[in-house]
Image (cartoon, rainbow, N blue to C red; front, side, top):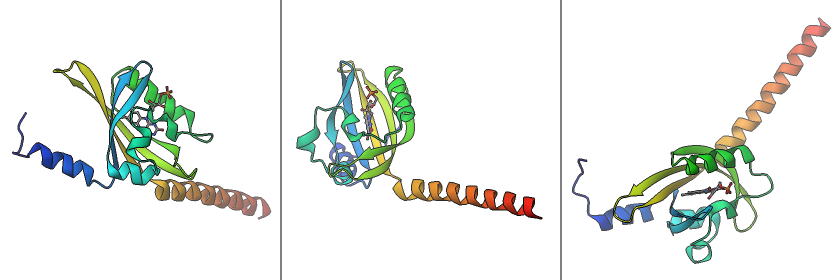
Length: 151
Ligand SMILES: Cc1cc2nc3c(=O)[nH]c(=O)nc-3n(C[C@H](O)[C@H](O)[C@H](O)COP(=O)(O)O)c2cc1C
């Protein structure tokens, strides 16, 4: 693999200063437990690293989390395949955000274990606009049908 001469500590500082959440997890039984979270993840979720390290990220899920997205993630992790999906998550204070999550496995030959990198992007504005657009389209459709039956 061809690489630029990027010092490893610079790579870590770049991850630490990223705008999106970046986490690393490893498998433990049925869980994938967090072994690293960057500051953007702490800001996004309201949890400090100390509170959530060694836990599975599902603590971000709640009542309204779309179960189909969770199933897609679970299957991808079991198949050691990359996945990208959007799901509803909950911050520590209970507020909701839409999370565009990508999870990618990486097999470490040295330790002979699979690590997973997760990247969390807050797409709440985009998802809410898309949902409003759906409602507006539906309303236009209904009005158009009403007008057609009246004429
Ligand atoms: C690296 C990594 C990051 C993850 N990040 C999130 C996340 O931000 N939000 C979330 O709801 N689930 C996240 N997950 C998914 C959950 O940890 C869990 O795998 C998922 O809920 C499916 O498993 P379950 O059905 O046993 O809960 C992440 C998983 C991995 C491996």
